[in-house]
Amino acid sequence: MSEAALNNLIEWTVSELSAALRRTVEDAYGYVRVRGEVSGFKGAAPSGHCYFRLKDDKAVLEAVIWKATFARMRVKPEEGLDVVVSGRLTTFAGSSKYQIVIDTLEPAGIGALMKLLEERKKKLAAEGLFDAARKQLLPFLPETIGVVTSPTGAVIRDILHRLQDRFPRRVIVWPVRVQGESSAAEVANAIRGFNALPEVGAIARPDIIIVARGGGSLEDLWSFNEEIVVRAAAESMIPLISAVGHETDVTLIDFASDKRAPTPTAAAEIAVPVRAELIAEVMSKARRALACWQRGQEHRRTELRAAARALPALDQILAAPRQRLDACAARLPRALTANAQTHHREFARAAARLSPLLLRQRIVRGKEITKALGERRLRCYRFYLDHRMQRVRSAGQLLEAFSYRKVLERGYALVRDDGGRPLRSAAAVSSRMRLDIEFSDGRVGVTADDRDGTSPVAAPKPKRPRGGEGSGGQGSLFGA
Image 1 (cartoon, one colour):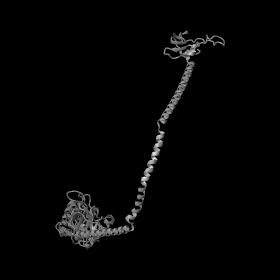
Image 2 (cartoon, rainbow, N blue to C red):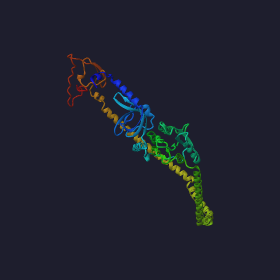
Image 3 (cartoon, rainbow, N blue to C red):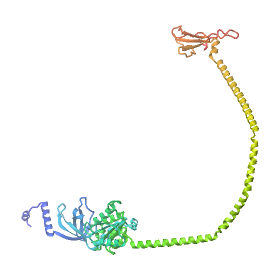
């Protein structure tokens, strides 16, 4: 193209060109159906939308599922799943690429569904949801049975008829859709709803749950392969029986349930026993128990008769005691007479010892002993008083010997201050101090004289008289 022609081309902005391309793609293709393998699927984004790619061996197509569409999809996209999708082809100007906005998604044939089912089974088994240790024992005769199924199908009628034939029980039906987009969520909510019922209330909590559905294709039964249903069945604290499809149909809820029934009718048979058979069995056991009791009674009667034959006759058992009784009865009068005579002699001897003279002698002797004991006690008491008086006199003499008044009688004097406290040195006497001097014949109050005006002067100590001299110059009591 020449330069002039290039200069005459229309100038587009990026946004205008992107919009034009989008209109062209949407007008040319519109609504399309595409088959491919899911790649790069990491679950829903925080916004709820899903972004991934569809690919085959030669090309890749960007794909998006909006939040509302993803919520109502029966089959969710999974990594590596071969699917067929339907949607609108459009462009995304933000990254200059085209993409498909998916409205529907389904596995590409039975093989894809089986592959998805096997992968989901391995995943849930690895979490331990199918372990035999998790399974609960079914009650022998439940009072209330909860049934999760469609209320309009033939399944619920088959279950009710079978229960009526075998053993009528109370049945609570939780109506759900058994196929379709919301089926899995409704079945899971029904199982959890039965478990949430109180044990005592207006609606009784069932003792066992039956999840039932009639036969159908793999796609029709797919709701019972969803994780939400399998996890609800595994978490159920009420024993659960799965009865989905016919005998050859297998769903993942069968592995998580506590018991699998091949058909809904078989589930009713598993849930309750046959009433007539129970009555017959009880009657049979009652007859057996009665016959056993009768045989036991007859055996005990036979043993009793044999034991009775081995025992001696009554006359033989009582003959010897009767003979001993007769002998004792014959000896009894003589024994009573002899016993009376013996006691009479002992009484006479005792009476002889209790004569008045003997009693007076014993009384006199007792008085003499009492008088002697009284005199002996009086002498002891007097001796004790004399001893105590002697100790008191000795203590008084000792106290008098150590009394300070004896010292005063020898010419000494006791000097006290005005408080009555004894003074033992001249240094304790201050000028003009009132003193109290005690002699052997009385007390004299004096005032201390300060000769040099600073401190009292002690009188010179008198010389002790020599032996043979008079006792007039003995000095003060403290030798001052």
